[in-house]
Image (tube, rainbow, N blue to C red; front, side):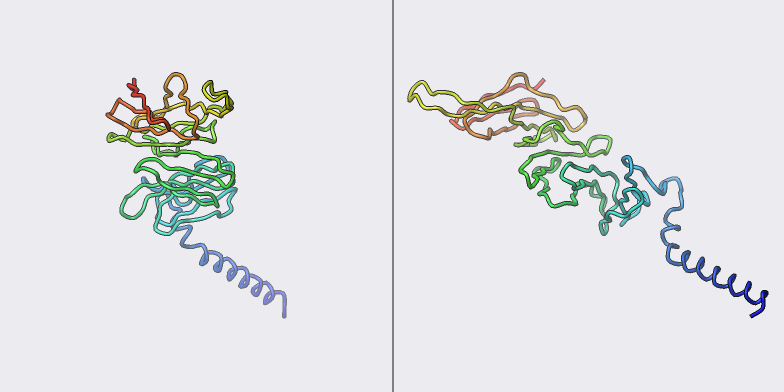
Amino acid sequence: MNKRNNSFFRLTIFLLVIFSCISQKGIAWEENNSDAEHQGVIEVLKNYDIFPQGRIGNALYKEKKLLFSIENIILEDILPIESGGIIYKGVDSAGNVKLGYKGEDTFEPVTPSYYRLITKEKKRKLYRITPNGKIQDLLPYSNTASGIVEGGKGQGAFYHIVKGEEFVNEEDGKTYYKYFFKVHYIYPNRVKVQSLPGNFEDVKLRIKLRWIAQYSLSVEFSDGSSQTIQIP
């Protein structure tokens, strides 16, 4: 083969390779086109990107490596958690917005607006979607967030265990254990979680919360007693 034919052969092979790559990625490149509503690649967190923005079946990437996509879901936000899983916010074809989870822990809705995560290590966390559309960990510093209840206006209340300690019962002289709970509340149009002053005590690991009215919360204890709190 002379030099001219050899050069033509190499050029032909090069063009075939380029055409093959474009054919395989053509759909992705087409979807990456930006317009007023679709911005292509969206950086949701450092090293995490959603591509393409606003498209059903779009995908999450970490450092440009595909992690996952959800069939018939538009991914809009994500929140990685300590155990290695990822909470995602998605919109289905009917326009319903919800949180979902990719991981080995238990993640489920417990009210229309609030979600619970229980890890394999039995850590308990609570989440929701904020008014600005972001995923929110309601109590980032605690692994015992529990008891979420939702009122008629979308307001939420929950508690976490502050500490536990032994005490001696004066009647029988026996040693028991009691727990201290901090109660928190949040409204759907606010981002900040508020806390009630002081702590509540019980000998059981759980207390029960119940909304009586939009600004009135009942705290119920294992002995059958209760306390009504007016929310500011």
